[in-house]
Image (cartoon, rainbow, N blue to C red; front, side):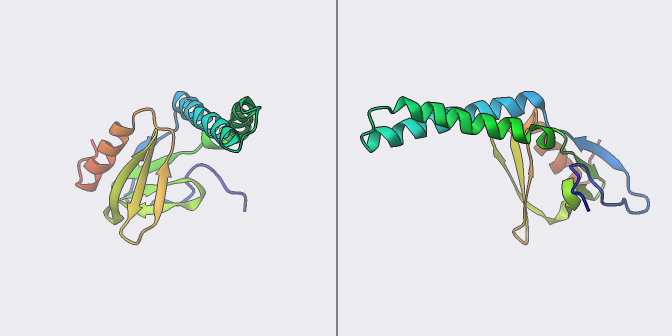
Length: 146
């Protein structure tokens, strides 16, 4: 079976998709720019701390590492989709969680992290408006998905 970045879990009878959460290309590149800045700073700091006279190479290495990651993962990450029904969130690669199972909702950059009562963690990555994503999920949890 080839993993897919769109939901494959079948809908229950009388269940419909009320909203789909898609990644945003701008958020993807913005998050990677921040990661590159951090990797560049870290690389230079480490080389400076160990006394390397060419600490600037840490910036080159950090930028290269994040750039390779960004271009390699873009085709998968920008096609990931989460569908929300009246009772569940259905995600890529067979992810399936009931709205009532969500205990905490957190943010990390442009991502929204869902933590279940059992401790499972799921990420809706690269959301254009993470606050809107959170609001939609919280409204759906109390039955107001309009």
